[in-house]
Image (cartoon, rainbow over the protein chains, first blue to last red):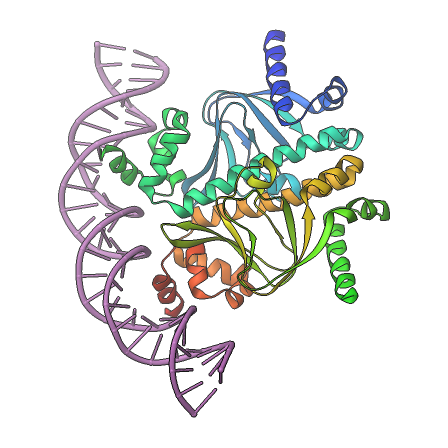
Length: 195
Length: 195
DNA sequence: ACCGACCTGTGATGATCGTCACAAAATGGA
DNA sequence: TCCATTTTGTGACGATCATCACAGGTCGGT
């Protein structure tokens, strides 16, 4: 168990280092905000209607965010290893989430507790910088996602994923992918079969 | 001209205050990064292919971001008074922009120069916090935009804009709006005429 | 008031996609 | 291995939307 924690710590530390230079002091400041958490498949990291009070750094497994639209689940994102999963709106403004975050596989993550993270940021500017860079990469990812959505047809979007995120096609089922691409399951099946 | 500058300064100061508590010290730190800039209608705030080296706080007028897809312009966002217009991807990572930012009306804005902004942030943590909050609100806006895109039909999206951003329908022409909503100009015209 | 450029409305037509229905295939326990 | 559950493929059909074409309308400038 300690081995697991050590490995996860190494992983998140490496991630934070890629975002901003991270010293021992910074690690000491942020360390109290972190805990290792595990979820079984289908467990919810965030329930719709609740306020999001944490960021989750994904160590192993993946999760999805989905809305419930007239009884149907619409996926809006998938988070894999080395991604940060959260509801920014809810986290930042304290509003209730209107979607769920759910483990799509058995999941190991590092939880960044909001209260303690803010405390760490107040005390150490580098933590604030880390937060900004983290948001930056989330915003950049979203910007790109909106773009492919507006610029491409369903078929082109699928090809784009195949090119840029091939691991997503491997790990996410066709049914789950279809709503992410904004098309019906049957349509995605047909797109995939042509050529 | 000094009056104009004073008014614009007041405006941006008020905006920054809504994001984070802003003291005289913070103002002194960030002030050197700011300049007032004006654009004529159709002037480019950011040319496609260039690196984005500034944030623009919109004082008066509005601008749009658009991709060029096979010779057609696809609008992805509109920025009005009290919005921040920029290409986050390009600004943060120094990559070349693959879209343009263009004044859609005569435009007055406050330009936040990237280099000087970073210098200010290094010297004053509150500027860093301002940057984070600014990114937060951009990311939140984008998240919402993706959602309405995935959850709604063309007609519902139009109704959503009418409800939540009525001023956008007033100021943006039908032709410009249609690509923003992801539909053909003709379709939007028909949607608007039914009921 | 006039002209030209641009924006908006509208019809006809075909392509794409969603929906419903069901069959086939894969998956995961007992 | 076998069965139940879930996932995926496929056909038929209708709805929605893109495209092309053109007519009417609006607006600014001279």
